[in-house]
Amino acid sequence: MQSFLGKSSGKGALSLWTHNLNSKEFIARYQGSKSYSGPAIKIGAGVMFYDAYAFANSRGYRFVGGTCLTVGMAGGYTQGGGHSPLMTEHGMAAENVLEWEVVTPSGEHVVATPTNRHKDLFWALSGGGGGTYGVVVSMTTKLHRDGPIGGVQFNVPNAGFADNTTFWEGVVQKFLDLAPASVNTGTHMLVIISRDSLFLYDATGIGKTSQQVAAELKPFTDHLDTQSIPYMLATKDSATLYEHVDHFHGPFPYGNLWVTQVTGGTFLPKSSLQTTQSTKRLTDAFRLVTESGKFVVGMTLFNLAATPGGRASHRKGQTATNPAWTDSVASLLLISPWDYNVPRSEMLSRQRELTEFVVPTVRAAVPDVEVTGSYLNEANFQEPDWQRQFYGSHYGRLSGIKGQYDPNGLLYARTAVGSEKWAEDGAGRLCRV
Image (cartoon, rainbow, N blue to C red):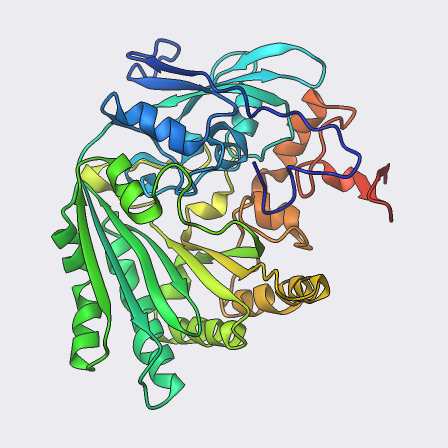
């Protein structure tokens, strides 16, 4: 299982291979918590999403999971927070965890829950980053009764315009102006913006029909129609999450998303999409960083403060996930797909460009925010301010828990909590700072 930040590899390191820990257990009524007594699933650390989705689906349930189907469910995904098409309805993946089964660096085999003597370890594992506090053997998480999901996909190519400005201002900025209205109703969207197109990978409406989701997007498509801008739109009504994911992100088991890329990321606070002035600044930044054709912008749009059914699914601070999630409207992936047809030196040059130009340019388009924050699983491993960007105000508490459970720094991963106490030498070996 790979990590965009290289946490799954290290020169001369001893890595623990959990791939074969593939146990799956359905729990009809979880009994280990005073606050929850519903259905749950206990899965081994090696279970990947495609396998877990099929297991839950066969019993009529779904869980909060991702759309990269070969990612490990209990690994860095959930331990880093875990965003999902279900996050507005059910909260983030880390907020659904009921217990962690862990081997600590001292060799103690423990089960951490929100209320037992390892509650601090439970909190840290639930969003504070993988490969840091202990070796997770299994995870138990909530299941939710499955149900209908409406999905919409569309593509607006940058072609046939008299000038490039029409695409950026008439398509991209207009979409950014109108997108918050959809996500505020609980709809989740994944969008890819490049110099060639605006591609809505999928808009997911839990408990909605595809026509309801399309109606939410109608102000944008009406604008395209009025301006005679061509686009392609498709809808899909699914009876289950499994069917929805298979259609938009499948086919199972491997999915259709690329995983080899130069990666950076940042959050967009809600203020960045509140006025035409702010969306204009952001549009200009997207245009600038993608105009070479080397980089694209991936946007996961959401609103964790939305209250589908009259209730809030997300409660800020109950897990170690970056607090910036609550105050954001999007998590951006700023990426350059790995090009195997160019010299490696060219890709290393793109990594420098990402660090020194692409990410700073986008962040500079967000006014009056000192730290935007970043999703620690989808970020730049060379982020210079990673403690604040990845962990926010939780870093101090997480560092204390790291010191309690791993005082000797046995577990190391780049940009993980406590990694600032080590430095890599020229040969890639670790030395204490």
